[in-house]
Every structure is written in structure tokens, then in C-alpha cells.
Amino acid sequence: MSDVIDFLERMGGDATLRAAGTAELARELDEAAVDGALAAAILAGDEKALRDRVAPGTFNSIQLGDTPQNEDDSEAPAKDAPETPDVPDPSDA
Image (cartoon, rainbow, N blue to C red):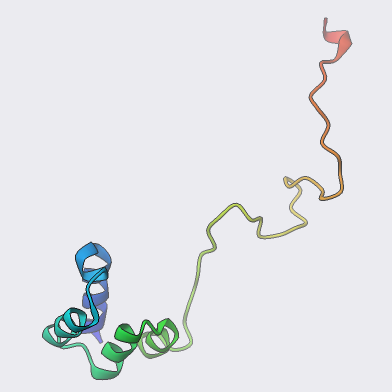
């Protein structure tokens, strides 16, 4: 199992390996002694099969982006609320 983890770590850090063609990638997987089923999943780009074989039943993800996780978030403006410009308070003058 550590062979595939080591290979994926190396692949993540090596842009040429990530962009390698199927034949070169297959050769690298063979040299790294990655299990046949795991190598096939990597070659096919089958993330689910790879995830299920490496860590069955345990997968955590992080959602990136500007989309709020919870629509009820108090910091997010209401969808139907009109935007109001910042108007100075006349009593501050």
C-alpha cells in the first residue's frame, strides 16, 4: 500500500509525471511496484476506484471557492434584499 502512496506523492510533486502519457506512466507505476489494480485505476483516472482501494469508507473533502457552505449564514446578504449604498449619517457632520 505504501508504494501507491509514495507514487501519488511523487506524482503530485512532479509536473512532468502528471503530464506523462499512458505508456510512460505505466512504466513509472511498474518501476514503483504499484499493485496492478491500483495502477489500473491511476492509468484510467478512476478516482473512486483508487479511493475505495486505498482508504475504503474514509474520505474527507474540503470545498474550496466563494460559495457559502450554509445559505443561512448571517454574514451572507439575503438573496432578495436590495443593496443599499453607504450613506453618511448627517449628525456626524
